Amino acid sequence: MSERGVQTESPSDGKMAHSQLHECDVTERTDKVWFVSAEIYRQTGYRGNHPLAIPRIGTVLTLCEQLGWLAPQGPRAYIASPQATEAQLRQFHDEAYIHAVMQADAGLAATPAWRAQFGLGGMENPLFEGMYQRASTAVGGSILAGQLAARGGVAYHPSGGTHHAMPDHASGFCYFNDPVFAILSLLQQGVSRVAYIDLDAHHGDGVEAAFVDDPRVLTFSVHEQDRWPGTGRLQDRGRGNTFNLPVPPRLNDSEFDVLLQHALLPVTRAFAPDAVVVTCGADALAGDPLSSMALSNRCLIDAVMALIKAVPSAVVLGGGGYNPWTLARYWTALWGRIAGHAIPTDLPADCVDTLTELSCDLIDADEVRPDWLHTLLDARREGSIRDCVPEGVATLMASTDMAWPLRAAIQTTDSLSRNALYV
Ligand SMILES: [Zn+2]
Image 1 (cartoon, rainbow, N blue to C red):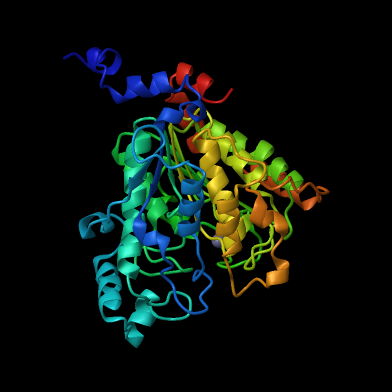
Image 2: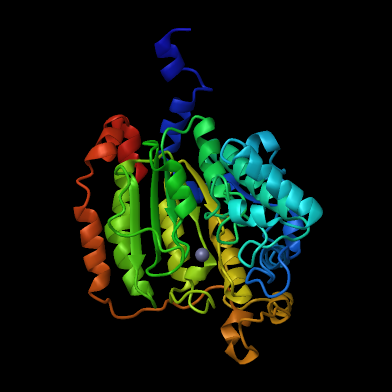
């Protein structure tokens, strides 16, 4: 077959397929959306007073089932995550570290050397039964999500989003870095450029470090300033495809819209990605006990939908989030929007029961707001726009002339797909 034939006539050709898909609005192709998770996440893995020892994905799954939003097959289907193999994990993680996680899980005891070398066994990254299976299943889910989305569509994987894990050590409650694998999976499926957008309250340090030298991947993290891990400064631009936008405490929806419209969307558009991967940490919401951003879930969901709109392929991940009510409502409503379901104004009684049964050591009973029990979508949380927000956006945008690698990337994209990407 001639080269021309491969590129323009073969129905199985990836480039041809992508060009066609650029003309579609992916959010309207609700026959090509998938909910990826696993039964293991119905139960809490962490124990004791760890911030993640709260109901999370299990509540999301229950609410989606109660709303009739999880189809066993066909359009908008639930698909079980496979567990990543050791060989797959080695595509990013060091063999010695993988074995340490495996052995720590089996023996539930970390040596002092492991703590020092791998970050395993302390308060931050404790050992618990099933930790290897849970962490490697999140990786398997992100690999599967990338494979599904690469065909065109949206794969929603709320069990993913462990964005702090490093190749050779655990960090920030994360053992393996599944967002890295979502990106690698898309690239391995033939996707040319991936934009990674991190909307968690904390800097997506592990993902940024993984791709800082890779011109195929843009990373853009929005996170609360002066919060752990302390990286992701405005001026940290890597080799040009790294973007960081630290934001002040109590960031409101009006302020978020400024950075969405004037930084996140323009930068993503300029990169002209074939796929986006979005980490949607629920700790960016108002009411989270470990951070102090003040966003509504409606604002964040609208942002995610804007970012994935008209891009051929999208993987949408979870992330942090330490308030079980706001997390469950956000990630349930996010799936509702992705899958095109009508989101009820008032939840049915069984969903209210599910939310009422939740509890959290970090949140007193009198802090639980009635709307956390009866609704999915927040009202928007408007507020005054402090000068530091547009100033930060202006500084960031002034730090790039969209030259390298952005302009080069645009020039390699045919005009049809570029013009149809964002309308
Ligand atoms: Zn976080």
